[in-house]
Image 1 (cartoon, rainbow, N blue to C red):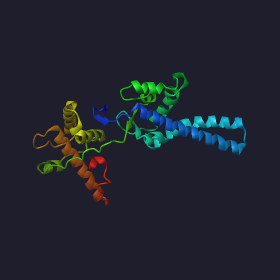
Image 2: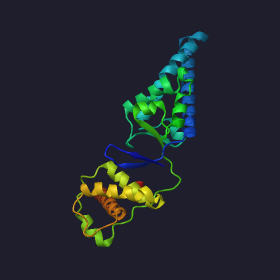
Image 3: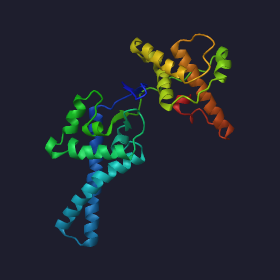
Image 4: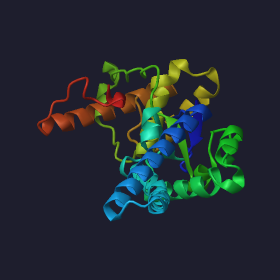
Amino acid sequence: MSQIVTGDAVVLDLRPARVPSMLLAAVVDLAVISLASSLFGYVISVVAGSYAYREQTLTMIGAIVFGFAYPIASETATRGRTLGSWALGLRVVREDGGAIRFRQALLRTMGFWFADFAPWTGFCGGLVCASIHPQSKRIGDLAAGTLMVRVRSPRRPQPIPPVPAELAGWTSQLQLSGLSDELVTASRQLVQRHDGLLPYPKEQLAQELARQVALRTAPAPPVALPARDFLAAVIAERRDREQRRLTDGGWVPTAAELPDGWR
């Protein structure tokens, strides 16, 4: 587990991918690029005339084109996934936990071919870098400000508890428009994983998140609440309002259709 601190001093709970998984994902992607390049060279050479040297040249051109176009287009369109990362249950995200865009995908791909998997680094620059980096970042990730994380979790997070009846009057008056998505995500993750975290630093994290949430919400709770209970009440109220908004719009989601953070 890794605690990523965003620019707003919000701690995000991410699971950096392990080097063997990243290596296998890269092998799958390289196999896809090699197969696509070979098919491209063969098909074009058959159409233009079957000459061995022409097929080899076209295959090399296809390798260059697909080597850059495939990862950039795939990671941009899927917000951080290629066939290799999808097969291994991985995803590339920004350092703040957000989805990557074209710029990050471009920088990662350039870093891969010119540093991570380049002849002058022995085709293992990225492997060495990821092995010694605490978050398993390769050189392309350092250049793009990204990291690869695991998106398959062995256990589902605990559901957000409902708002206690004695706090319903207070939560119904809460102003929640000042809460950012990052702060809500961090608070939800801490509440859901609170019981499985070590005593230190979960209490410090809960106190800091509760302080930031309190600064962006109003009014204050009628009674003093533990940090975890305060965060749980705010997140539960936000979830309930989102559910009511969807219901008023004519769609009543089932339990299976609700995102994990709303259950």
